[in-house]
Image 1 (cartoon, one colour):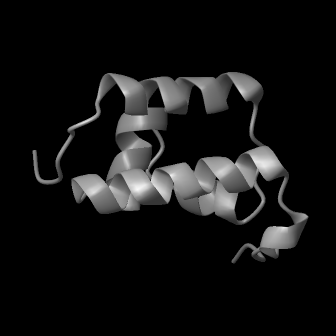
Image 2: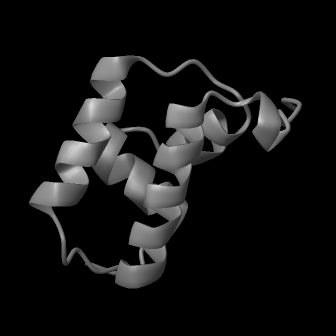
Length: 77
């Protein structure tokens, strides 16, 4: 099992992205694993970055672009 990094050790842009993803999932009803599958083609995406996994700027841009392009995506589709 991967050790979870304390939030204070995450880069500020990653902390901000996680907050955006959490807000998006709360608003749309998507599970974080479903969000990861849709936005990053990785069901473990959110858990991985929350635990300190490597994140490329291109991936951050891709995920944010997906949220903008899919503002009303609902769970169970």
